[in-house]
Image (cartoon, rainbow, N blue to C red):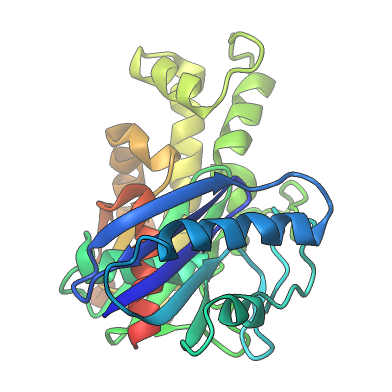
Length: 301
């Protein structure tokens, strides 16, 4: 029996078939349409489903859906910040209609990433885990006592909107000073440019990382500032949820020691409660497959 899993974000739509062990046996991706037509985006999802369902060599027994949020778990609808065409889009019901007779379960992309890493990645064996993606935004999901924690509406784990600067920049969520305004890739690049980082037009987080690796003081400062903000947020979430592990993936996390060294150093200053002494922060292992693997796991729990 196979599980059809979907991972829907603002850049790409991924579909896959997963075996009972969580191995992805066939995958397909399509770009997420950038327009404002909800049905155009749905057509890309439906095409991705067809791409993988058409090659299934065993019955599909369940469907798991990871979607950018916010989501409404009870209504089965999604309103992703990075997919403006979808507002209260009935994603769960549309997917269920496309794969009739098969149960479909919806979750946020953050909790699915955390579930994927918990099942087959860097989070194996952890009981209380925060999974995070640090990229164009900062997202997250929680696995508490070995099971996904989704909260009242399905949106628990949105750690990118923990406030770390009281008088900080406005955030896309409507708040101010969220960790996403400091530690996301675009936020780091913006701060570096504001502090006289000399870079070619169009330079992004990858260029910033290369400059930091070469010793550029401003670029290193951007990574240190982001790491401090992430450490403050992680310490707060860890104290609330009594975490034992934080797994971080995403494009910014690929900078490896440029991020993790100052992050761990700052965390030692913020996470000083005795029960947080064993808290570990590690890189993710599954890369772009984490959401799909987590969606497959979500369908089974």
